[in-house]
Length: 213
Image (cartoon, rainbow, N blue to C red; front, side, top):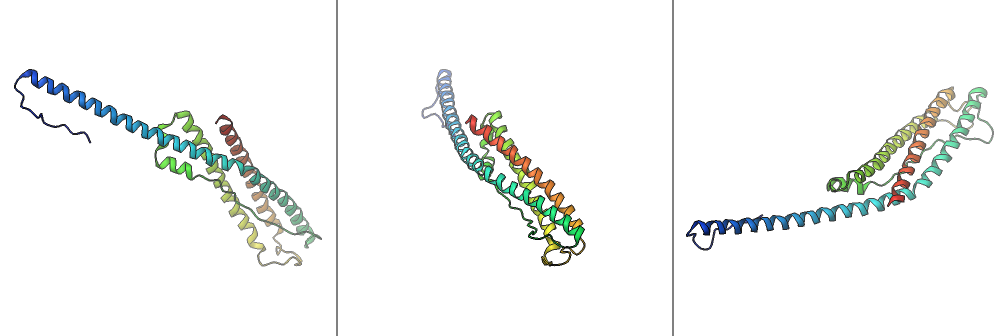
């Protein structure tokens, strides 16, 4: 808040009036300039804090991509074995020797606390457009991955449901529904292909960002 005070001495002439007006104008300009500098410094500090926090978060997330891909590829290999087993069950009405169905899916979460904080503090509004756009692209891909992983997890639950009350030695563990379960498993397989694609895209985004940092 900038205060403008009345003159301490009475004004006796036009000259005194203009001198006082000039003094007030100079004072206001100096005060506004100082206030602007302080605010600009605060914005720069906020932006640099956000940049440092986002860099640390992206680096941490990038370190987890290889583990997420390894888990995913193991799950994809198991699905192929499950489909072979279900084809055998549908044809022979019994499970193949030394085989079992393993239908599971692990969601690998990637942090986005710094992203949300930067949005809440409006730090992005003080960054160059190209830089803010790069962050937006990275976290948009993360969000797409979250959606795809959640859908895959729901698909896994739908597949496992019919198998909950069956035993391995049942003549047909699916009660005549091996083909139906296989179809659902193939949908799940397609969903994991999407997750795989998004993980690779996210990995590329991370590497591009970190190599330029």
